[in-house]
Length: 367
Image (cartoon, rainbow, N blue to C red; front, side):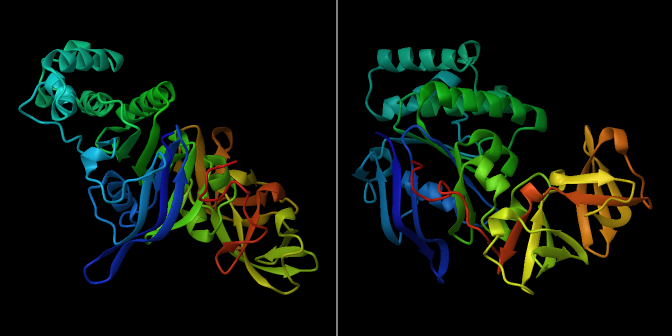
């Protein structure tokens, strides 16, 4: 077993800055787990604490059921890939891959054989005599992964390994990384600030803010039912529309337009209560004809997304964004109507989701 369990973990820097704040989390054996959040939320500090590169203030780190909190990085049986790859510039690809084996006192023949085998697995066999400066960004990333793989560690720790690649290379590397992790079956903890990467790669995601976990769940759970308005506004290529609303006569009124009360919030709200109505731009139906149960407004901005358009609609409801298919592109100044899908609407009170989140949205291993 190669699960990772964090119990009451805290990291406090001089001056009282709590980078990680009393955090409990379990990553299952063989799971691809993403730590996601804005810059400064504590995700890289948390990863470095698992690696042993940061001393923790309190709490424990366990890997495979073994308490490793007091162990040095080399004794934890983990391998880390850094954002800048951290390849040794004076070594060849083969020497970089073999270096962890050298540290472990493996013989020269064993080092050469394993380096050659790993390089072949990652498509680097023809590059083993080159130095890092002679490699592309994608090739450097693969060399760093090969070095991490050489010792077949219990856990891979990846600190934003795709951030230095251009957009096209990032997509290719993302596909490669997910396939590689599936084939190896190694427990992997992946840090990123890019929610698209987290949604595409992870089995589960932990969204962090201010050193704390705001939600843990599968990509589908976190995307469809954000547990709070922070997650709702952070997850998604376009943030969720969050609008002030009032509960009236068994419905919810947004800008004077009565809309069906979301089923998940039934029984959780009171008449006259002020809430926040959440709906993603892609869950709004667009029309340029008057539509019942829809918000009316004027198009203020149209952004081309390629296969669709992101339309900003301003009206009595406030301002909402709507994803409109490429065949129905409106123009700024046009009148339009945005009708929310009742089955995708959410209500929030004091920033927290009404009606709860799925049972799997927990920090523990999913059942």
